[in-house]
Each structure stands twice: as C-alpha cells, then as structure tokens.
Picture: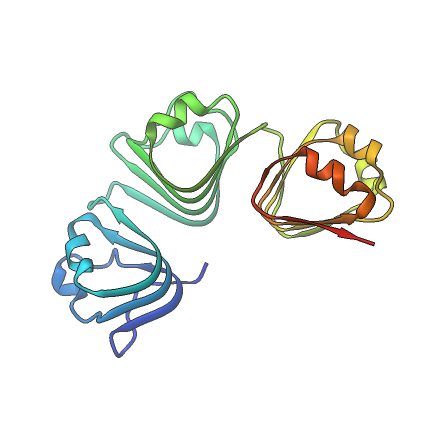
Length: 227
C-alpha cells in the first residue's frame, strides 16, 4: 500500500493509498493542507479530527481516528501475529492494523485494550469469544478459519500431482490468483479441498468449476471457466 505522511508543496494531497497524519500534534500542524482527494485511508489522531473536518476532503475511502499517546501500535500491510503475541500485548494499549491481519493461533486472552482493523482479519475458529469483545473497529471483512488454512496471496497454479501430495480436507484462502490446470479432476478436489474463501480470482477448467463454486463458502472474488 502506497503511503505518505507529508504534504505536497501546493497543499493538495492526492492519489496515495494511505495518508498518515500522526505527525501532527496540534491543529496548526494541519493548516498548510488545503485538500485531500483520492486517498484510500487517512490516519488522524482523535484530538485533530475536528481540524481534519475543516479540510476539503473528497474520494477518501476511510478515515481512521487513533487515540493520542504512545500506547498505540499501528501496523500496515500484511501482518501475522500468534495468539501468544496478542495475549502479551500491553494493557491499555491499542492495536491498529491497516491491511491484512492474520492471527495464527487461538489466543488465551487479548492483552491490548482494543483492536482496530481496516482491511481483512483472519483468525482461527474457536477464537471468536476472545477476539470479539476487543475488536472495537472492524472496517472490512473478518474470517474465522481452520488453523491450518493455506493462504494464497500471489499467483499459483495447482496440478493433480500437487493435490496428491496435499493433506485431505485443506482450506484455501485465495487473495491472489489461483489457477487449476487441466490435469485436475473433480474427485481429487472433493478429497483434498474442504473449503475455499475467495477474495481474489480462480481460473479452472470448465468441468471442475461447479465443484469449486460449491466449496467456495465465502466469495468476494470471481471464478472463471477456461477451455
């Protein structure tokens, strides 16, 4: 995600993925910003939200208000944390993630006072009751998955031979582009893939598209037939 924490020379900020205004301590620090446009996410301290409202803003996806102080941990991009790391978070602290946040194991507790996610949260099934009360802001999608789910974030091609080596009943989370080649058949998919969560794109031979549609339990992307 492209980001910036500084202003353009003419006071107009535009065409960036994320604008980080946490450098500002007082409204005076934002006075030289005249407009903000075509920005995905704007991060602003709580105490400067009123000052931001006086700036001309257009085509901004999300404005995230962050508590002031040193107890805010802000991460951007693709973040992985174990349940143990979340349990050891500082009491009174706030964890903010902008992007994809994957929790790799079930936490016994959450040390942070609150968690805010702008993007996608992937957490193990069984952790809903622990995470839910601490999740004070969720702007995006949340998925509770088996702990051994296979994440595909780039481009990958899967063959029948690959599936033969794969453990039975695997869950796929597709955020990139996944292609099934023409060697893959329906019985092998049934045996090896229990569930698909799709936010990217799948391309597959026409004969196996119906079974892929059936096992895609959550679909935010597209499945394309080839051949």
